[in-house]
Length: 72
Ligand SMILES: [Zn+2]
Image (cartoon, rainbow, N blue to C red; front, side):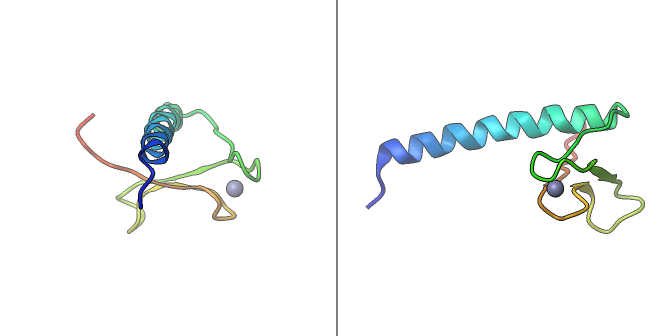
């Protein structure tokens, strides 16, 4: 059975992380260096023209944010 409270909390968390990801993507697109929260290494931006899988990636693989290009 799904606990509705847990489900709501989950939704809230994922919404928060979505907002965080958006803020992070903005920073990187603005040319700022952003560090991985896990290993503190600089995150790498991969653009669709250069990489098959575009997004923001950590060298060690702990951060993987795929870019959603929605005309922003
Ligand atoms: Zn990392």
